[in-house]
Length: 149
Image 1: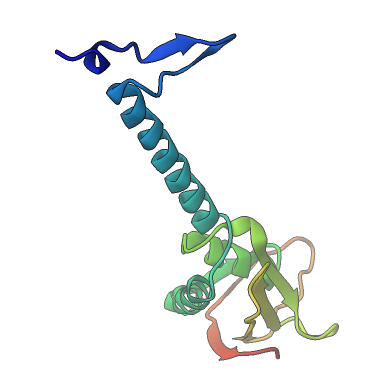
Image 2: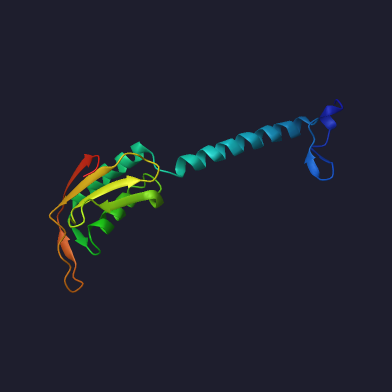
């Protein structure tokens, strides 16, 4: 064994630090750097929507909404948010769903923070009025177009 093979991994220089003369310490320093870069890339990829994730989520949610009749409890906007979140495509926190027009309750613009693309989702029939806390079961027809409504 050479002298460098017997070097300690850590040395004390006011505080404990890696010993740069130790081959084990050099491997640990490299592994730490690679691990931190990997963690950063993983966190930045999962932290915000991409355009393809948004597109896939909108189209999958449209298919799911048309698949079977739905009970409308809190309006179409809540129903849309639940359907988009259920796709598990991107982080649900940055999702932006807003009615396309002030008076219309059946057209919504869907987008995400830090994504320039928006989608227009039109639901038919128009949202039923809620009288006395009743829920309505509706069979939806969904039309999705790229861009604002």
